[in-house]
Each structure stands twice: as structure tokens, then as C-alpha cells.
Image (cartoon, rainbow, N blue to C red):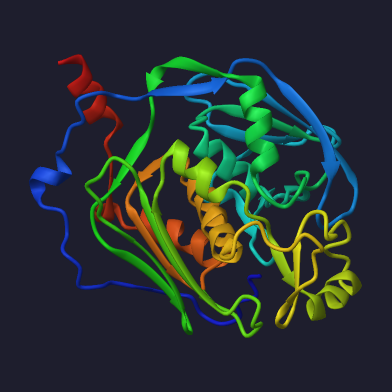
Length: 326
């Protein structure tokens, strides 16, 4: 849960910067963009509103990106799935239109993680409410829907941004950073430490590929502390939460009758969240992501900090296209 009060601090770190040859690195092939083969729809409960939400994920043309659209609001502007359209990060990642506050879509991170893990670049997500369905609290059902819709190759190369310099954001004892990374597969590592003994201290790391996302991250569910739930309900939040779509922890006890899906489900879910939040870069990030006690707020601040520093990144899409054509 993100509830950060106080200044978030971008800072630099003495880590080796990619040399000029790496900055000019060209891939042998240029991976193509993909969209869905056909539209697919589903209905589910919104985690915070408790409302029934109708969602359709539809194909979109090359270069379109991921865009959310409210169908229940007349003349609602489309909401591109980008870090600069994030309007709230307290309990989930929320996209919104600043000029029209009611035009917002919350809890986009699980669907964004599935789109990233399935390598979908372009899609139009239609929802008739203020959030996406939570389903079982993981990305599994989103992956299933995307698999059912199929995947269609498009005629433009994937947009890839190479991180060239270390970028870091801190808040108290929490921090996140992006580091230069030469492997074609992004790397993610994270640590958490919760007072609840059922969670405690956990760490996890992996190279992100479609296979590792499906096998290691997709099925891990969101979680909450039992003592926090009443306060959330009083604030009009988590009204759709239940043991069917979240892990609930009471100190050293997991209250879900079936228990955990794996012993480190908590940290795996946090990394899955990071995958979804980072895909709001609007491209594939070729980088190593590291985090400690991080969440949606720091993840979003990290992207803002990265793209505010022009020397810290390079769009290598054109380099890939040139190399592929050579």
C-alpha cells in the first residue's frame, strides 16, 4: 500500500554509465509491435468500488499504444496508459484527465503487467466504470483473456528506450532505481519488509520474459492487512475486496482458507505491480530495475525522473529499424 507523505527525492548514484558504444548499440533484429487479433470482453468486480465492471480489450493500430476509455461518461477523453497521465498512486495506479477529475480509471497495474508480459503494444481498453475488474487479484485472468483474443503482428518496430545512466528516487527507507542494462531482457529485483510475520522480509529477482512473467509473476495476488480493511471501508475503498481476490494477513496468519499460492507470493506480486507500473513508460524499458519497499508512488516518480533527464535515456527504436534494414 502506498501512502507516502513528504518529499520524494531523486538522486544520482556512482554506478558506471554505459559507454558511447553501448549508447549507439544496434540490435540485429527489430521486434515488431503487436496488438490483439480480435476484441474480447469480460465482467468483474472493481476492487475499490465493489461495482460490476464491463471491460473490453480491443485491437488498435500500430503506434497507438495502450489507451483506456470510459464508456459510461459522455464525451470522455481517451486516457493514454502513460506515466504522465497518472493522477493518483495511493492504493493503486490511477490514470485520469486532470481537467475532468471524474474521468479516471483505477487499478490499471495488473492489466498493464499482463499486456507487458504478453508483449502487447497496442490496445484500446473500454471500461464502463472508474476502475478495471480485479478478478482474482492477480494478472492470471488478464493473461487468459489476452491469450483468447490472440496476438497479431504489426508493421512497426516496438518502441524501446535504453537507460543510459542510473536514476534513483528515495523516500525515507524506500527507494527505486533504474540502471543501465545490456541484456535484451529487462531485469527486476526487489526487497520488502513488513511487520506482519506472515510476510516479513522477502526478496526476489528475475529476467523479464514472456515465459518468466507467466510462470513466476502472473498468478500472484494483491494483499492487505486485516487491521487496515475497516479503515479502508470507512474511506469508501476496498469495497469489492474479499478473500476471493486478495490475500488477507493477520500478523502471522494468512486468513485465506487455501493459503498462499507460493511461499513468497507477496514479493512476487510487488514485482508484478512494478512490471505494470513501468509499462506506463509507453515503451519497452531496456534497464535493470531495483527496489526496496517500493510501490506505485515511487514507481511513477521513477519514470518521471527518468524522462526528465534527457541524458539518462535514449529511444533506440530508430537504431533497431536501421540495423534491421541494413
